[in-house]
Image 1 (spheres, one colour):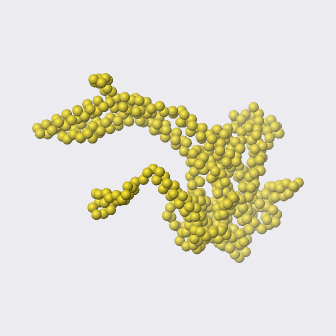
Image 2 (cartoon, rainbow, N blue to C red):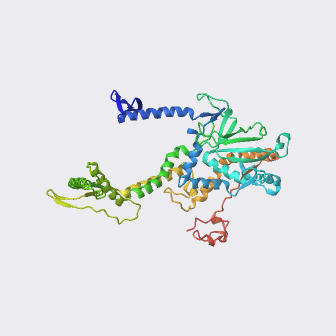
Image 3 (cartoon, rainbow, N blue to C red):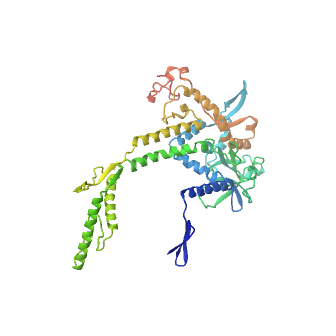
Length: 512
């Protein structure tokens, strides 16, 4: 092997006549400059490449950087100790007591929903209850629950419309039903190839591609037509995308809370790992070991004597001494690496004594001191002070702040989320009633997106519903104030729900 240098920083390593590798020597400042340039170039490339990409004959709109936002969002929220329950709570608030038909009226400058009896619209409910029997993926209640969940995660919903064969000849029930499709599987696209610098408009994306986008180098996907609002019965199967656009979003919707809270969510997810790793790997003594030179010189002399003895024993045909004080494979030739191996063997024993996860704490390490002309010679162990309490406290303080910011970013008051600023689940007080009313009133906005597809399907199958201003929504009852209820209908005790005289009423949180 030979090395040929070119200047002070570059060179080539040869093995025989073949160039084996090239190398360059960089200062730390040089490396930082190169890394910064790479990052800059990468961000410029991704800002273009992340908007669209091509698969076969199709151009596909990328859903976030690397076309992986829904999957990234799912993993990040799944691993958080707070957000899954907060989002599930929002789903439960929205769903309330389930779907119902209502007639919308205006009275005293207020829009009022009048619930309608299922008996009066039996054919509508028969169609809704027939989805699963017709071979669809979900029944209509499961479909709505999944749509609610998807909305609160991504603020967009993919629905696959399935039709009866008789749709094109005036069949009585043209829409067979709807299926929820997860955003992790669906991307919008078009046939044909666009250049990265071409403008991409949502109107151009007339196809929906269904596949496992989180898996790299997978090209097996199904292609569906995108739902046509101007001609809903045009395709035998179509995928519609309902989204709540944010500012600057052109194709897909993005969760409003996500980017502002992303780093806080990451930090909150890492905190338990930091603490557990610290307890596992660092909750033990940290020592600086000082090995006396006299000890090394003494061990060196002993090893040299053993090697000299082995030469004599080899000459006399006797068995060699091959081990000493943890050192193995001693033969008839001495070198100083043997001393280093002996030191390593001692340090290994010391490390095993100090390490562990709380087991066998009674282990000991034995060393021997001896007196020389310079005084007492012995191994010295100096404790490295570690501030365990300060480390754990700082992690907990950060986590409390992260919880507070996440709750604020989600826009849910503590009395609704049942999470205080410190991240502790608590019983809400009297303010919960009024916060609940305000929160219920804000749900109509999200409900409009969630029920958009199913209400359109109802109007197509039963045109008279539109004329009568009848829609499907979610019934959410408003609890009575405790002081307006007779004593027998109130909670006897918050701490003992078995004493309820009327279990259908909410607990009285105003009474001490």
